Image (cartoon, rainbow, N blue to C red; front, top):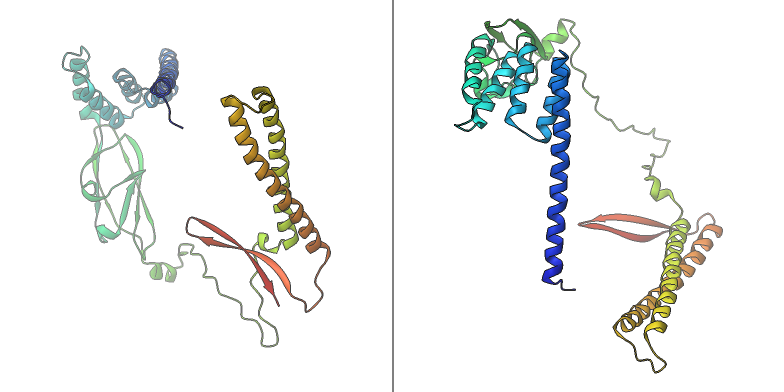
Amino acid sequence: MRLSKRAIGAAVVAAQLLLASGAYAAESEADRLFEQGRAAVRAGEHGKALERFEQSQRLDPAVGTLLNIADCEERLGKLASAWAHLRQAVEQMKADDDRLAPTKARVAAVEPRVPRLTVVLTKGVADFTKVTRDDVDLAGPLLGTEQPVDPGKHQVFVAAPGHQRRVFRVELKASERKTLKVEPGDPIEVAAAKGTPPPVVAAPIVARRAPPDEPPEAPSAPPWKRIPLGYWVGGVGAASLVVGLGTGAAVFAKKGTIGDHCDAAKVCDQEGLDAASSAHTLATVSTVATVVGVAGLGVGAYLLLARPAAGQPTASLHLAPLAGGAALGFRREF
């Protein structure tokens, strides 16, 4: 069916209105969170204020929100984070922004107070050793380079193949600079000899060998394979019967439309013609689905009630994965 230009234009306008309403809702929520942050600042709850400002910034980024985030972080002693957000705000400000000069002054005032930590790997190969400071991966140039950190306690984790994972702890104060030398833990074999428990490694799965007089156990089939074939066939029959009854009801509805839009000479308007065409298709689907449904229910009931005797062939249904789908098959075993 070909859409008119008017219909396409209406759809585009509707999509734009939907996007605009979504953006407006996000901005409104961001404004609400921002006002909650300001209220928390006035109450002296800078931790709560920081959380609200961060949520508002995620919904609707703004330079003003960044400045409030940096202010809360500075009051909470997170100097490296405050310094980074102040610099980010400076980068986003225009040259004629009245806040640019005061923000640059704050950057210059906070920078000397930011602690710096240099993590140096003294043993191990950097390409095969993972060094992490808190949640920051010190890969590439970050390893061995002075990095700004917030004042307080920090953990550095060192992991290397074949070695115990090792943890280093360091604490820095404002304006302090430190160098921390790290290395992997002992080799796993040496750690085991010292009595240090090695890392937990999942034991390999070994197949149990059956005794000579005991037949090997057959692999357990998935639950769906253990369902009797009669249930599968009966289920397909029931589903087909539902489709047949549903399409049959739709045929009766179409016949009512035909009666309303066709005269005694069977001359119909366009809606009557469309209804007649749909009724013919639905009637065919209803007939086929009903026949398949009745047959499926009958065969399913027979398979469930007539169980094979010992030594007689049995039937089963199997599912085989294929590229882009699957294939349902019938198998008889003798």
